[in-house]
Length: 215
Image (cartoon, rainbow, N blue to C red; front, side, top):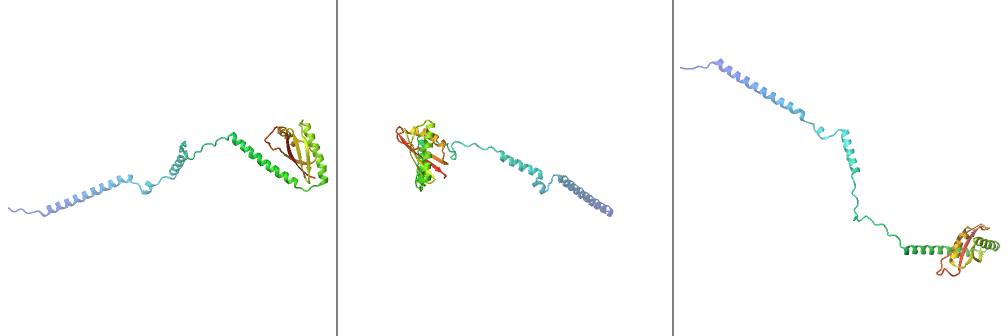
């Protein structure tokens, strides 16, 4: 017995299979689109992932600057090379040496001024009147202070004079310096006194006083 195929039945089967394939493709496409939409919110653009808001970035840089300022500084250790020990206090010998150097300097300056005064040309009239006046004033000032002294000589030149004084000892000479400087003098003269310390302070002492005057 011979079986024959029915044309309409085979055509219908092929159409049904094609429709099934198309439907499956649509479902797959729909699933892919759904998955892409689900992943979309988690994505970020490069600009959003690498930059900070302006105010947040400013605050961060400000905090970093504060951290640098407030960072504690380590204390210096005692064995660091740049730490210097305080200078040693001067000894008594050092102080005496400084005093001698200063006294030598003052004596040198005073001696130079004495030489300058004695090098002046002499104004005989002015020199005589000024010499007598200064001699009397020196003696009067010392006597008023209860000090003993002898005015050996007063030499006057053109605008300056030099007085040579004698004392019983060096200590008496030192005691008279204040009186000689603050004393009253008739002539309009400035004055300076320097009595150098001798090796023996117990013997009689002679010193000089300079008067710088205006005629």
